[in-house]
Image 1 (cartoon, each protein chain N blue to C red):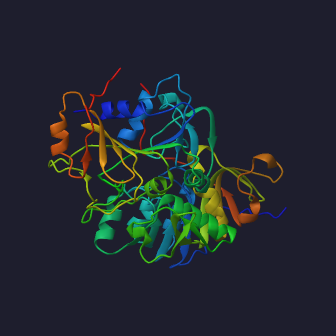
Image 2 (cartoon, chains in turn red, green):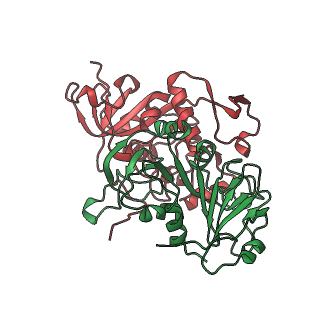
Image 3 (spheres, each protein chain N blue to C red):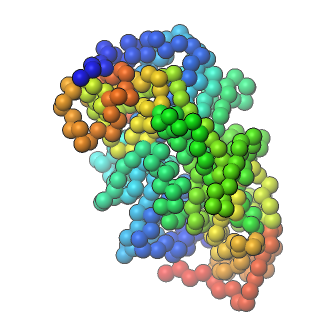
Length: 231
Length: 219
């Protein structure tokens, strides 16, 4: 087995340059690569374009990268929960490309799967369709959307092995498996890293072929945005 | 006039046994509280879950289990987890039977606007554009008028639209209305104590009234 292990987050992100394109898994704050975000904050880089469904909150997740002015552009579906984000956007310091969530997911999937474009009904007749090719199939109009690929994709999984195989937990899976496929280099941080052979091959979500670097993360905070309790 | 909970309660009567259902954020989320217990339905969460269970107890809280509104949840019996591309594949692929979501405006031909107000901070459409473009059965939960009293049921949407010709039914605080394929809001039911005249005066789009309009019945 090819060993994909790196020592820690600092080593994993050490060669990410300014002005590159990054994908980051997560939905809200669930399943975000906390360790790699912390390690990126220590790097002196900027001009990043980040593909991520959301943009974190002011003091956690991608919000921390925004606060340090490391991000030039966000490609997301929903960016509501972040005052610093709003300030930078209104001041013209940050570009944002808002994409329907299913289109975002499929563009990432297509990027990893070698499909340069596809047709979707989402956004037909809206401003999302402006400037895009449309085509009618079986009487319904569809929009052409292009694949998305990144220089680096950074994902968070529950368990992983040294061969880069990954298993996710709960709804922390979200965009992580598809983003793992769409980065030229995929960095995976996991809560538990085991030697190759210890995970059940029947239960692998992301096969190790997509993953170039893997390490066991530390001190996961797993912050909750809306703690909602049954009476 | 109906409260938000009563809007949710009325919408729950549209739910049928065996349906897979996507509930939007806000009033639609409340619908889950009123689905009769003898119906077997499965709630889809766009972030990758079929089978949303009740909110957790303090001891059950798991940061790795949230719904599309980022609230902590539990897994229902028989649930399944998947990634975001698969989630929207089942939405676009027509496998979800019923979509319930909120709206800022609906037009008489079924266009919906619910994602953007020009001049205000744009938060994004999330999964709404995928849902409205794909579902065969879309019910909208909304207030009939804005806070300033302007009708939100219009001949054409004034706000940027989320999807075209997609809304089939509206449950507002005043009425239940069907959106006809040829255009127009067909008045089906009145909220208790609300007159046809009031609904007429608060509906800017084409309103169709046929015969006696019954009051909604709540159990």
